[in-house]
Image 1 (tube, rainbow, N blue to C red):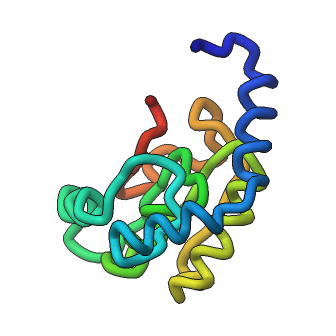
Image 2 (cartoon, rainbow, N blue to C red):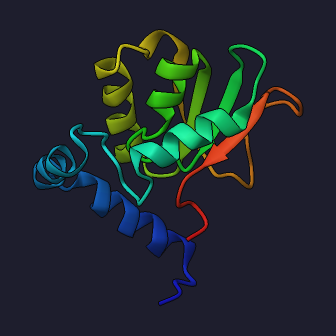
Length: 137
């Protein structure tokens, strides 16, 4: 189903992120042995492949478009030492991402920004890499 009204899409996402994720958390723990705070389909092994694919020579600035609840952004920050900027439209998602960054111990070098990938508030060349997971699905 394609949603043509941008505001309707934003409203749907806000409702999605306002829901409790306790059942989803339990499912992640049972399946993967960890709760990631996922809001898509990216598994831990795939996130590790994403980190390896960045192939940055050292810690860099990474833009995570459609960060949702902050997975895999917190893993990129924790395992790769990167400064990660999570951008998404629903503020509810960004609140969850901020909590996930704090829980993962990476709050000092992770940031959230409400915005759209079509109008980013960053200068060209600011980021060393850009990631997204399930954003274009």
